[in-house]
Length: 370
Ligand code: MRU
Image (tube, rainbow, N blue to C red; front, top):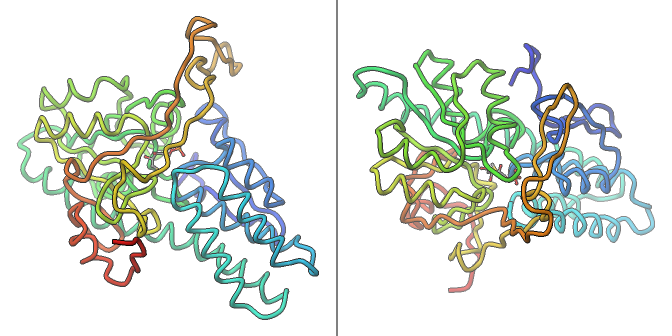
């Protein structure tokens, strides 16, 4: 995607020992590029959400493992790599791409011969994870655009109105995004499209990130307070909801940013199609029951108590609640498969049902006991 006319990915290898990211905590008001030189720096960048979003967390973990391999003492190489993998996996619990990427790296490195071969394997795997992420998101756009075109063909007038929650955009992946990929594909092919962007409290990934990237691409959009979607749906102002996901069970239960479940309920009540876009790296092939099994991250109280923004040219943080009030900060919720109209993947669109998902991905090994 372009930033002020220049193409960027969200993560790239700048030098053999230097990975670069866009520090997303500084957007939308500052565009800051940051260097990662060690696995520990990659872990901190994930933990403190300089990078975030399922696909990008996975890609950063991939490069973090490469940096770990590069700097691991040769005499205890495998042990050091296992430690780095455990450290990276512990940073954030919900997005399954993180453990998927670390395990893929450990598998690739274990197949290689000597230490130099292992470092080369880690680099090739990190690059492959990033390239596949971008390619899969591009394919999601190719498949998902048909849903938007079908609505455009049916509608007599006005834009196709898409509602999205949080940021499952270019910034959450290596390029294109998952939920936004069909939007970009439609916009680029001339479809009149408009996006309702949920602000997504408490961290405001919608207001800060989705609005910024849609704006960079020129896509018409309107930021709305989180509680607005139901009202818009009741008044026929949403044609389609498309959201991302941080982990989806192979039975179709969807973990996504807190508040997604309420949008899915409103969509069901109003007959609005509710789609979830995801690359296959976000499926959990071990879990069956999303509500019971998916770990839900709880984050710090300050994210709810304070809000940050631009004030007189300076970034300022201000207190919203009474100082002494307690807060709760659940990062994600689970939308049961029955509320999901369909899943848009790199291999096509399927129902959020075990058989339908298995039909698209017969090659994936399901490892749960049952
Ligand atoms: O906490 P974040 O920002 O890493 O959460 C991830 C998200 O942005 C959303 O849940 C998104 O819709 C899915 S990630 C592709």
